[in-house]
Image (cartoon, one colour):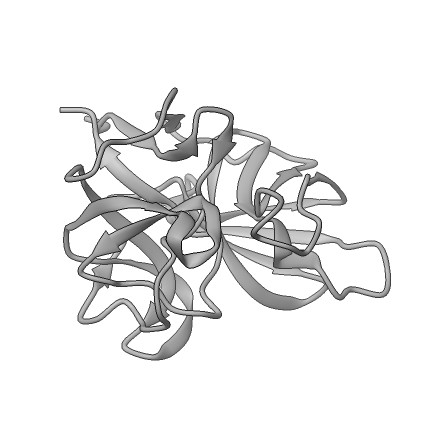
Length: 196
C-alpha cells in the first residue's frame, strides 16, 4: 500500500528543495526505499542533484542544478527505488525545463521543473503542501549524500523538525530544520512529511 506523502513548500507559491543550514551530510541515513518518488538527476552527464517526481513526466529539483552549463541542458533521471517490471530502476530523459531562479537565493526561488520525454510510473505521486509548514512539523530529508560521500542513489535522514523559515540566513524561500541533516552539494532532494 502506498503511503500518502506531502512535499513541502516554504511559501504558498514556492516549492522547497533544501533545508537551509550549515553544510553537513545526512548522517547515518538509510536507503530511501520507501520513497520511490525520489530521483537522481544527471545534467549533461554530471550527477548534480536529487529531485522528486511530481507526476509521470515532471521532476522538481533545485533551480541551480543546471547553472553553469554552456550548452542547452539535457536531463537524465533515475528512480532508484521505483523498479520497472524487470526489477531495474526506471529511467527517463528530458530536454525541456523551466526555472524562475536567477542565481540569487535571496531574491528568487531556487526551483526547477524538468519535463521528461517518457514517463516514470509510480503507484502514487507526492503533492506539494498548499501553504507554509508550521515550526515543529516532523519531516525527513531525502538526498544522495550520506556521511559526506555523494552517491548514485538516495538516502533518507532520521526525522527532523522544521524550526522556521530561513529568512534570517538570507534564504527567504527555504526552511531551517533541527537537527541539521543537509549538505552543500546535495541539492534538490525532497523534504517530505507523511499525511497520516
